[in-house]
Every structure is written in structure tokens, then in C-alpha cells.
Image 1 (cartoon, rainbow, N blue to C red):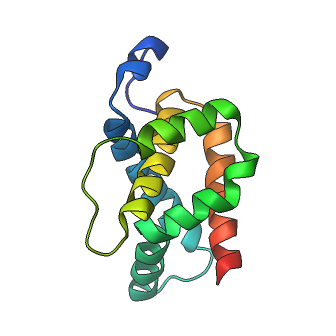
Image 2 (cartoon, rainbow, N blue to C red):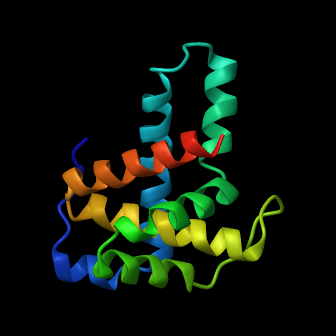
Length: 134
């Protein structure tokens, strides 16, 4: 999937981590929904599985499972997202929500930088780590 807009690298650095997380969340939703088509075509099952996987709780666990595979720059992006001021949802702890925001910010930055190879590697690592948690 190509980014519909070209963002200069210096402009990406100025974007709020919450904006990056907004993009990363959308990408991860689509990635997971597409990936789950290999598991089932039942729409109820697809919805339930994808909602569980993209939850803040699951994303926080996922980040911690793949953290050692990330570069220092990628961990820095995560930290920026994790430390952004935001409000936690009802179904996750504050720590889980912040970790999931950091994870999504990382995905958003990779997407906007059009680093699709690395983006897909991280999403695949995340998907496999979630499958191994079951």
C-alpha cells in the first residue's frame, strides 16, 4: 500500500506523535484484517479477532515481545509516542495505552517515510507474536 501523500522527512519529524499513531493505527488495522483472511472468512470471527489484536492491551504486549528486534531509532520513535499526552481508554491501563500509542506512532512514521519493507517486517513480527501468545 503506497502513501497517498509525500511528506518530506523534515516535516515528518515535526508531526505530533499522536498524529503518527493515528496513521499507524489505521495501517495496523488494515494489515491485521487482511492477514486474518488467511485464518477465516467469517465476518463475525474476523471482527472479533481483529478487535482483540488491535486492542491497546494486545499492542502493548506485542511491542514488548518485539522490542529487541527494533533499531535504536525505532525505539526512539516508540518512546516519543509512548510519552505523548493522551487519555487512556476504559478497557486498558494507562501503561498499556501509552505503549500501544508508541507502537502505533512507530508504524505511522514508517508508513509516512514509505519504509514499507520495514513496516511489513514489524507488522509480521507483531502478528506472529500475538499468535504465539494464544
